[in-house]
Length: 444
Image: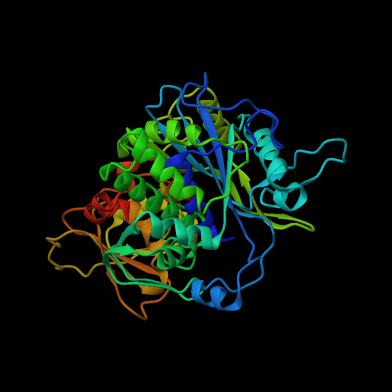
């Protein structure tokens, strides 16, 4: 199932926290039942399955989910509720992460993490995540396309926002700039979309899922849907009608975790994606995979094992410089001022000095970066090195970027290529909210 499935499942986990494979006698990891009083906090693994089983042709067309399923996990999120119930940490695990499957009495086998489900369902998925992260999974939650749509509708819809048009033919998404309140069908398209510039692909889609989940959790909290046991029980009952849980999961567990989550402000939730060091690690028979950044991902899992927040942890962020999604060495730049040109060259950009005719009056405005709209994503790397510079889009300008240095925004800062920290950096939930997104240019 597409990323959207996870968004639904994650929403369910955050608002109700149903545990799976965690009760005595269950078929999963065999862990004892978790709660907000768990000594090291509570970990909930949320997955969405890429399957169209049970959907009619009409439903597939209505939901715009054509294509062939793989019976694998298309989305994974690990939710950690701190032992004191004062923080919820959400980590997105990309489906193409290259890892070793947890097996018993079988030859060692490696592949994409989403393949664990096809090999051994939820139990093997849980054990594989535990092996990869060193974290004990207390609860497991699973959903599908129709479950996502139903959940969003029953919880009153979802609010999303964008400062630019969003269009994705594959998912069927079409959104104009502004704030929109979506029903479940359109919300499904939003969380599945992966062909949206400048942040396309899995990481961009995962960040949009995180935004939707954070907004829905904030709205449920504001509407007091988790404010007391009765309200939390109603919300949990709503979710249980469209989300699959283990047979040993009790309503009391859902209410207890839901009550804890209902007390959290957006600033007490945090979101990130596992740091990646290689976005195209080729493996014969497996294809293109993602390799986790060894040191930073281990620092992330260590923080959660110790029941600490990951936001603000310097070990998880890239060393030095402002993170950018494109290597500076791939950008051709023309600069009309020697000092700025030299600084950009030291940063790794391919810089060509442009002589300015004698007698040309100095610019009085800010530095301007002229670019072709086809290069909307790469230009953000150059803009990060020149904070405050104005972007000027000119169709047909070509692949070279022109920098006209002005009186302001002429300081060059160090950048470092780290796509994970551009599209999946650790942030608190308030930094994913519409109010922040629409009023903070650097967050877009």
